[in-house]
Image 1: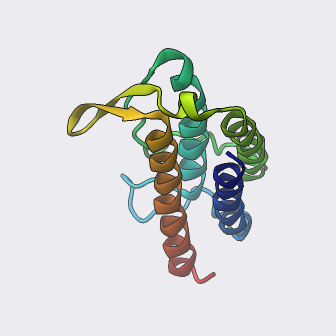
Image 2 (image 1 turned 135 degrees about the vertical axis):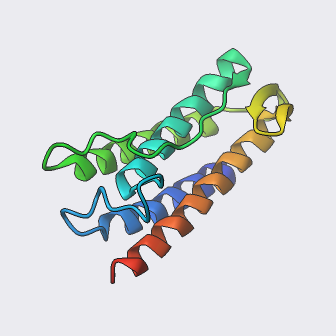
Amino acid sequence: MKELTKFSIEVRESTLKRLRAVPIGSEDWRVDKDSMSFADIAQHIIDCDLALIESFHTKNIGSNLGKAHSALTDKYNALKDLIEKLEETKNKRAVFIEGLNQNDLSEIVSTDRKEGEQQLTMELLILTMLDHETHHRGQLSVYLKMIGK
């Protein structure tokens, strides 16, 4: 579990690096009105972390589609607050993964995906969620380039 936990932390640190590069005032920037903003992406990743941890107990992880305008950015430090929450969920996710054993990784979790319900082992679900965050990390990198950062 140590290697998986370490990888989980490294993925998050890389995501946080990009979010910390977002200029103040740009947290709600988006490619178009229907796309997620920097803040929306951060909120989506937080929601995914919490859903992952909860899925171990419920044996189901619902559809957790990222949505435009889902993050509350009406206050001055909105992105800073989301970054702090991402730090918290990074640690919660790491403790969760570290606490799993081989039997836990073999547990089956149902997922509600666009393709329909699927059955995944907890191990595959964790890897899928880390890959998912990597996808959004790439999105953040593109967004930063688009705004000249």
